[in-house]
Image 1 (cartoon, rainbow, N blue to C red):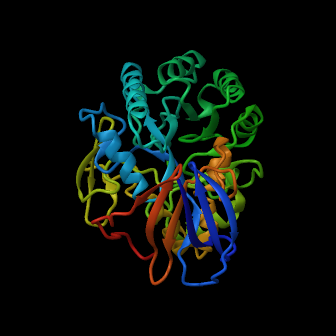
Image 2: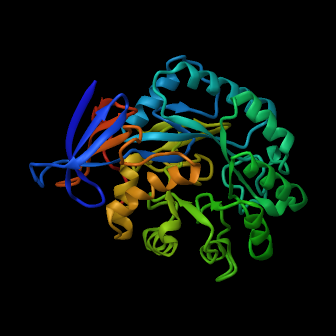
Image 3: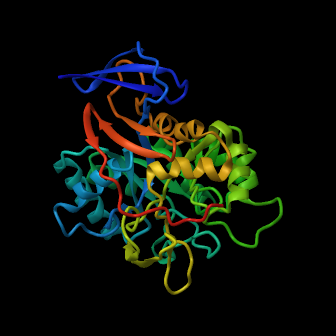
Length: 389
C-alpha cells in the first residue's frame, strides 16, 4: 500500500510530498502546491527515559495483560515512536521479574515503539544529596555478571545503563568498558563524579549525563559541582527534563544553550504522565499528582519523575528557553536516536515513523506514524497544568 502526504519539513519549512510504501519512506520530493498552511512533518519523538505512562507503572509487575499495550498506544498519542522503558533501583529478584514481564509484554504487543530498556540503577550514589527517589539499601557497585543476567532475561534488550562511577571505580571502569563493547550506552547520573573521576569514566566509554541538574545536592558549591563539570566536557552529552520544575526556567535556558548539540530532552515520565491528577506509584513509592501536574512524594514533597508527555516536552522546552522549537525537536528525535544507534531520519529508505502536527495557533499533534502505520490522535483530556515560566 502506498500513501502520499503533503507537509512542511520541520527543519527547512519547505512543502514536500512524502511517499510511504511498505512501511518505509519511498520518496521525498518538493510539493507542487507550495501551501505554507500545510502541517509540519518531523521524525517521531525518541524518549530514553520513561518510567511509566498513562497509569501504567513499568516498575511494578503488570497485573493487566492490556496495560502495556495501553501505555505504548498512549505514548504514540503523544508523538513518541521510540522509547526506553526505564527501571529504577530495585531489589535484584524484583528487577529480574520486571525485566522478564516487560520483555514478554513487548514481544506480545502489536505496537512496537519500545526499543529496549534503560536501567537507572542500582549502581548509583546512595548519598542523600544524589540518590533522589532511589532506595539506597538496594544500591550496589557495578556488576558485569548482573548486566549479563539482565541481557539474558531481556533477550539483549538493555540499551542503556545509568551509574555513578565514583562509588567503586575499580568495578565501574571495567563495567563501562564491557558494556560499551557490547553496544550498551553508559550514562552517568545520581553521581558526584567530577574532575579526574569524570574524565576516567568518559575515557572508559560513558558519554552522557542523565537528567543533568537533578539528583544534585542543594545547596552546592558555587563552581565545583557536577553541572559545571559536565558542561565543560565537550564530548559529554546530557539529558534534561524541561518541565520548569526540575530545573527553573532561567537555569534551564543556560544549560540548554551551553550544551548546544550535546542536549537530549527527556520526559522522565512516571505513571501519572498522560493521566488525570491523583495518587500513582513508581516502584516502591507512592506519588501524588496535583492539579499543577507536579509529581511529588506525599511525605516530603520532593519531586519523583515528571508528568511531561513527549510532544509537550518539545514545545515546553522551546517556550521556557527561547530556543527554536525545531532545535528542541531534534534534541528529542534524531539526536537521541543517533546516540542509541537507531536509524531514524526523515529521508528515503528510513522507516516511516514520523509526526504530523501544527504549531499555530498552538502546538497540536495531528497524527503519529509508526513503521508506515498511521495512528490518528485522540486529543488528551488533560490540559497543560504547569507554569508559564
